[in-house]
Image 1 (cartoon, rainbow, N blue to C red):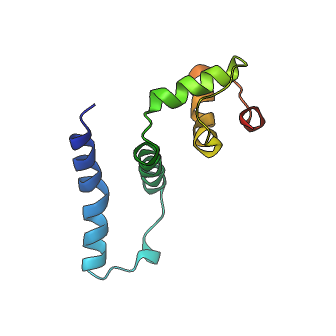
Image 2: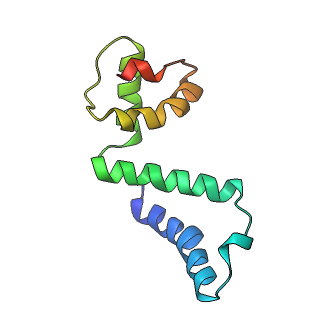
Length: 102
């Protein structure tokens, strides 16, 4: 994946609009908080997790798959795995619960 392109897209779609809102003194509370903003914040949060812990999405899904098979995970920070359980269950039609990680 071209991470430079991803950072450019994030900058164009999120940072510039925020800059323009602040620069033009638009009150944020009058803007509707919609699903697009919510999903954007969610994706940025996930991207920051990948950068912080030096993981990629495939590592996390692999560890969740091992947990669903009854094996142990190499990832010690359970909060990282908890964040991706819902997506993993939806993609792979599994039903992993958070208590499996602990």
